[in-house]
Length: 385
Image (cartoon, rainbow, N blue to C red; front, side, top):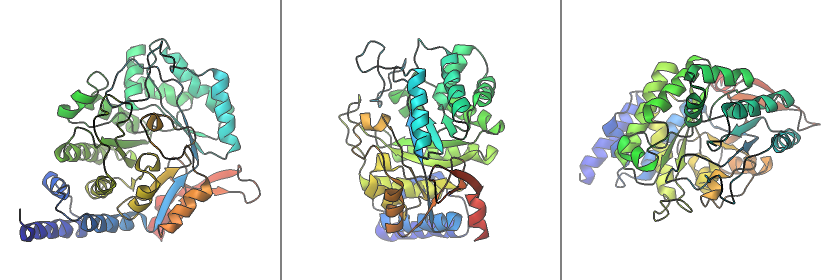
């Protein structure tokens, strides 16, 4: 396609976006063409971002908990997993888990993000009791726990339905679900990365079941490995289709692949330009998902900060004790302070707003940072403004 035709094609897409029309598969693939100026794609995504979320950028105060890295699966992209007898393998004790809860409380965290390996010697009850232990001792902290891959494993362990597992976990204290395990949905790619774990149909069915039970979830896409633009757009459209049905996805997180210490370490990680293009295209394709997150752990702080002008309206949080992407070579800090996060948001020209896991504004006592409560949904505040 020559420049004249390319410019005309982009104008057609811009007209669709400005008039509120949904973009097609072909539109998305076209936007991934490196000859389409990234700045133009970013400006269009920023238009949608500001229509949906104004000038604010959200963050939260959170900690990660990975209770075990022992895993029955051997996904080619994973540097976190371990065999049972590997020296780096571990499974946390109740006291270690409680200590993380105490640390989270002392640091004013509103959320614990809980994911880990599928330990073949730990029964389902170990995972459930972990949630109950934290909820009983730290009832104020929201527990965002277990990817669809883990829920699928619990189905296998219990021989019960996904609905039963989700309801049982919710009764123990689960508040919402992260979006991990999605990777790339298209079988041409998924079978190369993780052929034995929960397939695309199971991942989508579990999230649909969660939404139908009133459990809000996140959604993700792992990009920058063996996939092509077609596979990425196919992935986004499958998420969009489910969101049309349930409306249960609250945020989409594009996850940049980190190859170090994985079975795909011959690949280069995606460039900052690819990161920004993917954030922008995600914002344009996912017209029915309210929030797009620029996860600073994976993107790096400068790229995540820039992404706030390319469609992203959320930068995640303080992220204490993140292991999975640091094991894969992430060189970002292990934790950012609230002042650091607010500063980089302000430097990007956005207004920092603290949110809880389910996107309510967080209010804190001026005299005690650990004293907080959740207020109105942030989306209501944007709609009013």
